[in-house]
Image 1 (tube, rainbow, N blue to C red):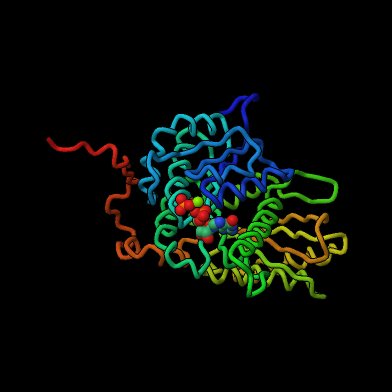
Image 2 (spheres, rainbow, N blue to C red):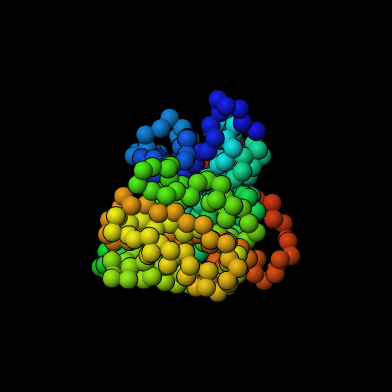
Amino acid sequence: MSDNNQTEVTAVGIGSAGCKIVSLLSRRSLLVDNFAYVSCDKGDFSNVDADDTILVESSVDQKLSPSMVRGLAQKSFSRILKVVAGSKVVFVVAGLGGATGSGLAPLVASLAQESGAITVGVAVMPFEFEKKMKFYSGVSLRRLRSASRGVIVIDNDTLMKSSPGDSTLTSLYDTANKQAVKALSSLFSKSSEDSITLGLNKVLGTVLQEGYSLLGVSNSGAVDKAEDALAGAVLSLGKLAEAKEANRAVVVLNGDSSLSGQEVGLVVKRLGSMINNQSVDVDYGVNYNGTSQLQVSLLASGFRSTKYDDYDPINKALRGRVMDDEMDSSLVEGLEAIQPCD
Ligand SMILES: Nc1nc2c(ncn2[C@@H]2O[C@H](COP(=O)(O)OP(=O)(O)OP(=O)(O)O)[C@@H](O)[C@H]2O)c(=O)[nH]1
Ligand SMILES: [Mg+2]
């Protein structure tokens, strides 16, 4: 698989949301050695400080669909394979629902799997009001799941809970990114003096299960902040799937030195019963380098169905029967490729 000179863990950001989130993660001290970016929009690389940017270009300006993006990306397969070559673990991070992330995340994941890496998709799902994005995101999530060994699903609505009602869309995204990056960083953080880290194996042990892993996030500054934030995180998962389907979970508490051992113990003990399954296996991490506002990030796995199944009504109607599930791609050529008839 990999030799000692090769990169162990790679994160690839795809499309606008994926590039933004991965570039924010690249500034943290994480168990990720290599960061790469793939997009159809050069602007997505503007805040990225890395050489590994792959631009998937169309010869004409046109509105793209996921299958058109996959067609255009065929020219970039060798570059994508080079980025993931030798990695033991590859995280493929994308917002689903647009053309680029929805089209390319499953494709990059399958290339990474082919290269021998353990591939984990990290999918950010659309806000409830982004109705037009639902169909592509539902189809892409299903494809990402079958192209990867595990998928971590993050719901944008879960992340925007702390935004005021009159926020602009860009500030909603900013808040969502801060929450997502804080939660993902705490799951994949390197060990340090002021933290008890989970380590990659425990997180992967949770994610590499059948079905989907869901990331629930909640913050609290209340007197009983540990219990309050945990309840919020469990509740946010309950909106996405049946909490009782969870069979494994890891939890990370992001707070400051006011977080007592008793509070941590309480969270770990309560978690099993809150997700309605006493036998659930719970590992935990704690970061003391945050603020008094406690963030609880709960990653639970084993969800065979989620609310996103409804985003792809065709697949739901097929009820598991397969029509033609090979990822389609259309080769797009501009008008200049159409030859006039004599
Ligand atoms: N959390 C978060 N979500 C975002 C952000 N930008 C977009 N999204 C979400 O990501 C999903 C896809 O949006 P984009 O990333 O803009 O789409 P894209 O993959 O670049 O695709 P196209 O631009 O259509 O080619 C949608 O669900 C959006 O809600 C962001 O900065 N943060
Ligand atoms: Mg975009």
